[in-house]
Image 1 (cartoon, rainbow, N blue to C red):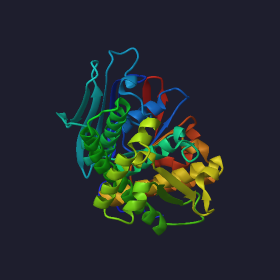
Image 2: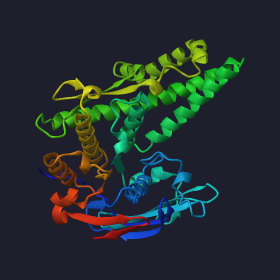
Image 3: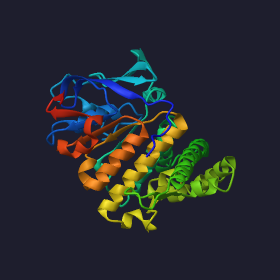
Image 4: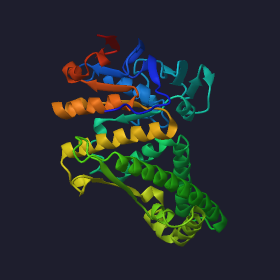
Length: 379
């Protein structure tokens, strides 16, 4: 298997924590592209992955409120810093929360406005046990996953999606209050139509590119089956057939026509907030939700690997992958295949597991670290 051609392969060379989760203080340096964190359950392995995930827009892999990340016995805030090396240049990125609740972002110790600035230096993806029920669970979780797909290649997508969510809440409030002046609703719906079409278009573009990438490397014999991916949503369907401005005008008209219905429902019923991600097991031609638990895990892993390749192809940055308890779910053959795929990606990979033997097939290419409560030590 050949390694992907990568313009830039950022590596985290140093991780520093202060009052983050179970860590009062931690300062670790890393040399390898494959970091294997092992230790007992509850030792703090996932906390380290979560700290790294905060360098992607959003709330990290646990989707926790930031105040929850502060150490319970600490002062109420926390600080996370990483040194990222890419193309021979090292950049320091910092993210923190003050005891008063103010979020802080730094690039080479200089303030920046948000975590979106980190995307110029590093892209971060993750796969956690909490995602195992993605295909059979609620549609909202799949929409969130879909937005993470889009965010991986478009750092502005998260901001658009957040603005859309706020605009929808504003319209719902206006409908609930029965605002008499229609101009308020007209303005709210104009904003929703513009943002909704932008969000739907970004999702559709990402999925289209992902589908093309998967098709180019399709292998029915792979231990990580290829996925057939589509978006089920009226806006996305129309965007495949009509110009964006025409879809925006249609959506604005639909919002105006559905005010009474949406007021009764207590929410806006049409738009990208109601779309769903449909995934099928390609070799079996079967809906992912109907597959076995093991097949779903392999399918999700394959989809994550494809997403990493897409980010590499579109941005020139091989993403940093955070894989929580990934190896324990697979037999020896599939585990070895996974490690080969990960090494071929060309980016840095962080993995956790209770048993260090899970990482034995990696040999000297892995950098093992023993994690104990409040501490991480090179082995």
